[in-house]
Amino acid sequence: MPWSNQGGNDGGWQGGGGNRGPWGQGPSGQQPPNLEDIIKKGQERLKDIIPGGGGGRLGLIIILLVIITAWLLSGFYKVETTEQGVVLRFGSWVETTQPGLNYHLPYPIETVLTPQVTKLNSVEIGFRATRNGGSTPIEAESLMLTGDENIVDIGFTVLWKIKDAGKFLFNVDEPELTIKQVAESAMREIIGRTDLTEAITKGRLLVETEVLKRLQEVLDEYGTGAQIMQVQLNNAEPPTQVIAAFRDVQAAEADKERAQNDALAYSNDIIPRARGQAEKIRQEAEGYKQRVIAEAEGEAARFISVYDEYVKAPYVTRQRIYLETLEEVFSGKQKIIIDGGKSGTSGVVPYLPLTELQKGMSKK
Image (cartoon, rainbow, N blue to C red; front, top):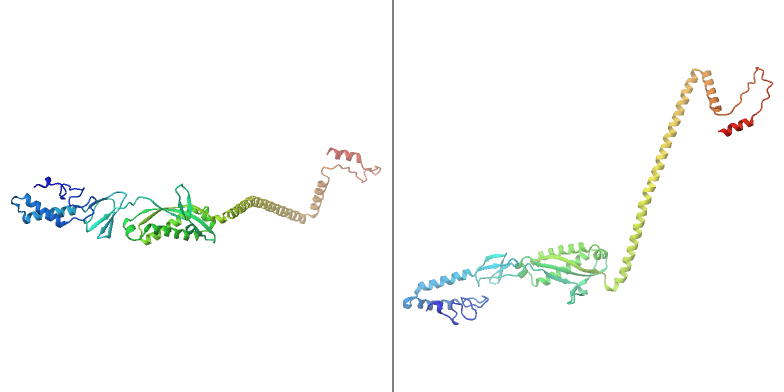
């Protein structure tokens, strides 16, 4: 009977019943082929095909070659771009393969797992999201001690994906729980070195960066095969019991900073002006000093020159000084000169012309 004419439920190569494969395994290919049954059935079919019913050793060899070839070809497998292949040899991890067409020793020697590695996963720490979009705080996870011995209530989310599927599946038991616990530990370590004000205000970005770095370091040491993509602080604030008092402290700190800024602005305004005024006075004093010194030196040089001339001709010098002094004294003044000599003016009665003097002074 030819193979193509066989049907029913005998498990033949035409497809068999119940969507079974060519070797009699289930639809998912998970059951190993029963080689003894296959060989026995092959011998029986070969006897039917070969005239005289004698397949002999040649037929058995052909069947075995076909089975071995099909078995070897079953080792090819495809890994999608969003997956990694994890090859297991007798259940033990051997290697991790990348997307594309790959090959492993056929079942049951080796099998392959293809988990998704591009999907982003998230872990919530310090809170749990609710269905209505809100969140419920978990104080056992969220309350942490800061570097200045205050308590802060922190909730954050860790986004991660699989970096090495083999390590993720076989190196650590419950890797997701490990990521959560290590993330909480890393956050407590970083917050323990950070002041409360920094942690809840301008230092939030630095806290996220430091936690991501520390978390990745520890996970790599554990060989989890996970890649941390982002750490997001959802909330960072004082505990509910003291938040009102903390806000009062923050308001006082803001007033203090504002007063300091006003004082600094006044200082920056008054100090440069005072320095400029001081520099002006210093420059004026320096100019006065130089002027007085120059005048004194000039007077001294003038006196020395006059004295030298006086030594050469004392009488002439005295007369010249006398005349120059009179010229300086009487210059620009109203004056009347009466010669009291023997020129016949002895009968003139001298008088003081006050009226004329007053007119002369009024003209000035």
